[in-house]
Amino acid sequence: MRNDASTVQSVDRAVSLLQALAAHGPAGLTELSAGVRIHKATAFRLLATLEARGLVQQDGERGRYRLGPSAAQLAAGAAGAKDVTALCRPLCAQLAEEVGDTVNLVVSDGVQITTVDQAAGGSIVASTDYVGRRGPLHATAAGKVFLAEWPAARLAELCGGGLERFTDRTLVDQRGLEEDLRLVRTRGWAAAQEEHETGLVVVGAPVRAADGTVAAAMTVGGPTYRMTPEALPSIAAHVVAAAARASWRLGAVKPG
Image (cartoon, rainbow, N blue to C red):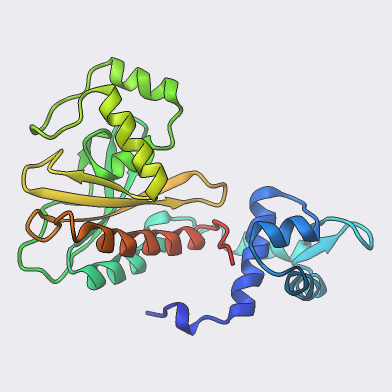
């Protein structure tokens, strides 16, 4: 498995510029360099190289940049590689090895969540789950990752229908859930501490598509004696980093 230390910085930055153009459309040099947090002179050199290969094109001498015909050719060749599970599987396995606990990749249909892939860690005692298992939005870390993106009116509608209680720690009132989701947005990861299953703690982070929407949630779950409040920030940092790498694989813009 390759890590960030083995990447070539100039290639990495060039890809970020292409992803920014794909996600946001035509843009000028100043806008592009600021958006991906690359020095303007560096961005200019990279864009000139990409333009020479037909991956970007410029409207006039000082015009805005847009994706070129070669980018469309590459996209056509990758049309069959849009499976989120396949793209994220190596990163889930790497994360499970790093943290030693079970890693799940989870999607949502807007009503519930569904586990679509899983990687086992090396711990003898691990969380029990299976691919295809469905779960609630409000009582799971993965579900909260999706709910954190919902508009207030949609969340109110969900809460208005009544939230099921699974344990004595399940958040079943709207105000408590809203406060928890604000924390998710602030720190970039969600936690469910014995809210769905007694004895199980799970943390999750968003895997974003090229348009910035949440395509999936990547989670790590384990028993309470390992997933302690003191350990959660460190575990969450691993999850957030892995989910970010997965997002870049899906076309999300990588800054810097």
